[in-house]
Amino acid sequence: MFFLFLPRLSAARSTDADVAFGVAGGNGLGWFSVRNDTGEVVVRRPMDFETARQEEVWVKVFHRRRPLFFSAARLTVSLLNVNDNPPRFHESLVRASVQEEQYPPFYVAEVRADDADHEGGGGRGGGSAGRTVSYR
Picture 1 (cartoon, rainbow, N blue to C red):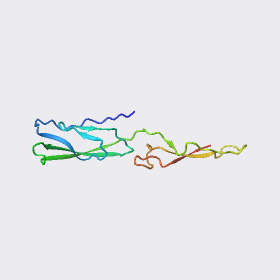
Picture 2 (picture 1 turned 90 degrees about the vertical axis):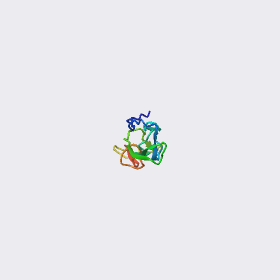
Picture 3 (picture 1 turned 60 degrees about the vertical axis):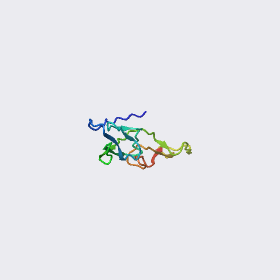
Picture 4 (picture 1 turned 135 degrees about the vertical axis):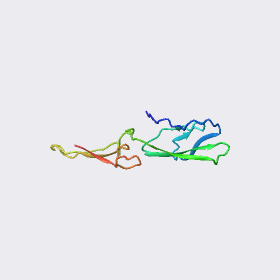
């Protein structure tokens, strides 16, 4: 299950009904929206560290009667990684043969697995680059 805790962000309340808010730029992944009347930045869908480690959205405030009168501010949200992906083997079945009367320890087989949540490997989220696990 996915839980997201992002503090509620909002602009100072305006008594001027002619003031409105919106997205001015950024938001390339479509994670955020801005409430037109309050300026609250709202998370629209689940964010994923393996997709992007941070996302940027520009929030604008403008005068409804004169939309060219506006100001914008950049909001950068950095995500923290959680272990939400299981490790995966490259092959689902590995066959091995051993000779009888061998004394341990001896090499049996080698399997490869990747973990998208492991820091320092491949992929955008930092998954492991095929760590090798040997069974003896």
